[in-house]
Length: 339
Image (cartoon, rainbow, N blue to C red; front, top):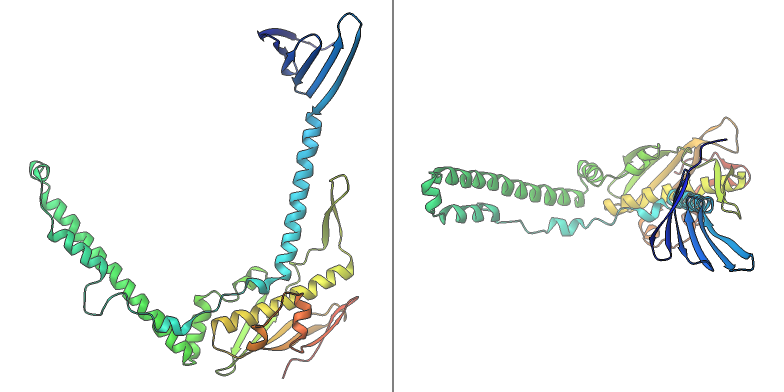
């Protein structure tokens, strides 16, 4: 027989603390009705004195609490899964906001060239108005305070110079972008981190500036972001992870590919003054075993991209009449690149 210990002590009228080897509990009430709490949960007991009749019911238990927490955690996992699916199939909805190159080009300088900048003006005023007090004289720190303010003046000059140089760089870049300068276009793409999301998803991108109105992009698609298993909750709140149905997987793949193409087009027309973006999606064909090549090829125009509606990306891409052969039960077949 294992060692047991139990002790009960009164700590207030109608309130007792119960100590045992299983933990600490509390009981509140009198002989007719008591509520008990312990490591096993909460229970209520009722009795009729002198009759031997009693009733007891457990209101909650630690096991129920654990189950409730587990169900909540399972729900969070399913929500995160569904949010992830939405994110990779709606990439185009998080495209770069349009860059106002004319507005940037016409931005006024932070101060007139040849004049002091605002920080230098403030630092000079502070230095000119400095008057040592009796503490400065007592501790002979006049020169130290003046040296500190002189350093602040030097630092302010650097900050103002950097601010003016940044203005020159931005306005010059804007002017060159609007003039169709190809090096400026590349700098603009780098400055606004275009295509970063595709690097994060494991895709490869190569782009070519065809002329002042068109850009060609080759996207080598990585299908790894599409999950192979689907998560859901059972009626009892348990987490279910099952292999995704082929039709569902292929539909997600098509939406992922089409959304990626639309994202590329939107990012480019929002960042550059181009009218057309040609995108070729390269990868392995699901419908033709062992075959690799072009899965989708399309020319996206600015007008169409600026008038997208809220519907599935696979439906949206059809408005641009792409070269695409997609079978719902087999996936992408190889097509010719857009000419």
